[in-house]
Length: 333
Image (tube, rainbow, N blue to C red):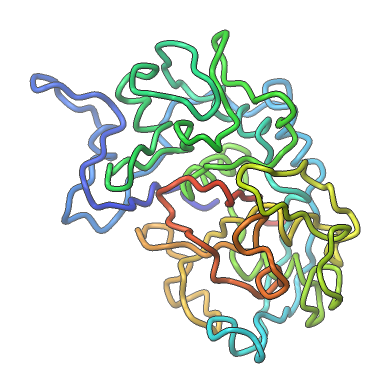
């Protein structure tokens, strides 16, 4: 199983527990303190959480039961007539793995937040968390604030595009958004959710194999141009769709929403092709940008960016939440 790091967007001090001038940090706090000379990020793995069980997490359990098996084999990555970072077309050998049929939903991610020991001072609406609502240690977990804040949360619940609120002692999803893909999760937050489920983020190579199958098709469904029956794009901020809403756009393996909907975090650092798993691009203890795949519903939403080979996603800083980025989990088969 892969580790679940927090990758800092800014190499500044981040504390996930409140420290006063007279307090003594415990070992877990020390592990999460990062200064300008740090080369490795802290981790979310020391957060106290309830064990994953089907009773506590029915939506996440359903996602596990519907994962799609991708066979071991040789798969094509990239294309020679694409943008520079998609070239050259080449092959990679992959071991068998499983991948979520759809993107992780708001309801599933709320199950994870409810499993964590996160203190909250008072209820707040979706996308409107403030410092008054949260103790300082929870601010570090649930808020991103302005760029340059140094915060690297699990998910940015202070962003208006977040669909998760807090009331009646629990994290809840906005009405009609339970089955929509979760937005505003950071890269490390996505990794943490997947690990809680006993999974991980897919590598970039695994993602493209699941989306493309065993041939050199341009889109999950083939080579015909995208249309509304195949892919969801709205062009309007916050206007997302339920996961799996475009079954005609399924990949050869039956994986859904691999084009449009939300772009998706992969585990990989941004590195040029050819793909080489040994060149550091699969390093989890690195603060650099990560690759997102699949286009999205608002920014990368045209025929050139909805392809299975597109890998230059719009605005994919790992330490920030994004309205157009979600994720799905994978696991060894």
